[in-house]
Image (tube, rainbow over all chains, first blue to last red; front, side, top):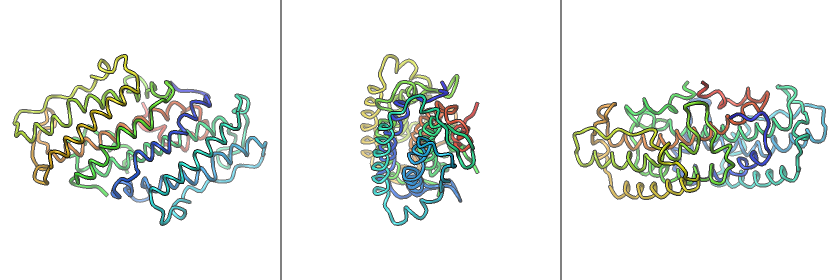
Length: 179
Length: 179
């Protein structure tokens, strides 16, 4: 059942769980899993955590504040490769802790905004997509989390694609995003 | 980097984390998330947990024992819809706890087997796929976990497909397994 608009409590329920979901999936896991990719130009679970950290710093809450401030300028563009520099030298455990800390503060900031349904209809200008609403921004935050959780699971699954032998025929995830 | 054969410790590292990953993703989450599907004939996160429980009871460890016993008969077929009866009336929390309990015992049983590389090459007969090895069975157990974790994330993401508005263009998960 698709929802046209979000319920704030439902969105928060996902957003506040993502750090624990990633920690359960990745913390303490052997390197071959954490550093696996789906091929050239794709991201490892390690890269994904850095990308999520950059989003907490520069994307979601800053854009929400931008809309609520009634800014007519477009949002700042989001740097999708910042993590390749910013994560350098940091362990998975440190990145997971940084993400959890930033997310906790950002969810608190979101709840603090006490957004009404009218607020969720307020508009901002995306540099490429044009007119968007605050509600759409928050729905995107949620889907973006889930997209990257699915990516982490899919990327790790592919490490064992060959090892499953004939069973690969039943494991449809091995054919998602095939290159 | 694909692995042709599994390392038992790497496989166990995923298998032992799956209950906590699902609990972090799903425990206490509002019903619209847990009961969402991707459309007719697809499974909700709730259905997935029941399916994983049935696998713990009837698939992975029983098939491993079947191979190690040198059985020449095919494995018992796996019932992919058992959860629609077995989960009936049970809360998500109860299902997550049942899965965690069964998985803990099954990982302990796997470790207890002290499998050698030679054991991993031992063969069994799959009722549809024919000849398979114990190593392939264990790799499949791992990929099957990750496949269903990705499915849970993807299914929940699609709840907000429309709500993301123009951003849906950037959220590729919304187009995976489109029907």
